[in-house]
Amino acid sequence: MPTSMPSAALLPRRRFARLSQVATCLAAVLATAPALASDAWPAQPLKMVVGFAPGGGNDILARILAKELQQQIRQPVVVENRAGAGGLIASELVAKAPKDGYTLLLGSIGGNTIAPVLAKKLTFDPRAGLAPISLVAESGNALLVNTQLPYQNVKDFIDAARKQPGGINYASSGTGSTLHLAGALFAQQAGIDIVHIPYKGNSQAITDVAGGQVQAIFSGIPPAIQSARTGQTRILAVTNAQRVKSLPDVPTVAEDGLFTTGGTPAAIVERLAREVRKAVEKPSVQAQFAAQGVEPKTSDPKSFTAQIDRELTRWDKDIKAMKITLD
Image (tube, rainbow, N blue to C red; front, top):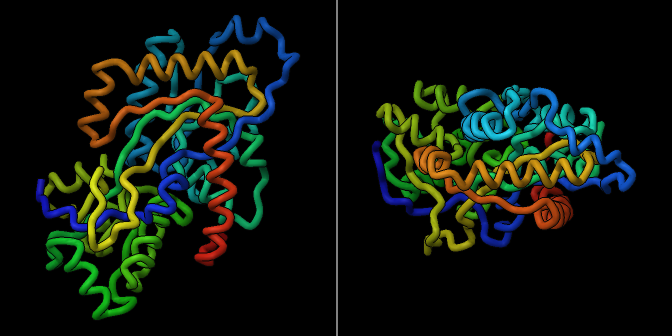
């Protein structure tokens, strides 16, 4: 895989907490939910919805997790891609599903804390409509460019952008996605003007970078690694554990997590959290995650919910300050 010095990371430190957790809030669980509903669960196949097109980081992780979960709970777990609106289409579908734990969402920070703030109108309540189950994985972001371009590192990229304001474009998996915000915040920190080109998913966006239709992309690491192996794209930088002196305000990771419909009985949410933890702790799953450039990470529904609630509040302030809109 073509490599270069990771001379900058992609997102400001003061927003680390805001971009390092997947988002939405657990609704108040119905205390009177019938015990038998959770005792009998699962009694039918599950659907795991992904808010982006096949081939992206979320999709890859969803399929790894779905395979393990269906072996553990002995019911099929089918992955369904519902791309669009920065992940909001998928979030809405799950938020309006029956409150029985059979419809899941493999969510990202963009679709669950950023997109709800960006959208002018929502048909569901992002805090009450989705119930966080557990974090699934921790991953960095990558700045990927076409190998025909002269940029060998982030300094080259920034220097070129400063010489031609608005002359360099970058793709993302969609307006309001984590990767869109990664590019916007990177540009803000570097003091450059680069043009955002939104796609409906990471896969086609990376394909166009490889083909030269777009110059760069802020991508999740799993598909970036796959693309760079072809020799058509080059990774200029990845987020890692060490901050870079030239851009010291950049965090190291973004995280993905699993949700279900708000109001699902607490016993089912807790059961799902245990099953996710069991799956993610398997050496075989950890090896698959490592091959994709991500690190396994789980949590419990209560702490996940509290963190998400804080992120939604904070992003409301920051998104307005940057004047970025989804509509």
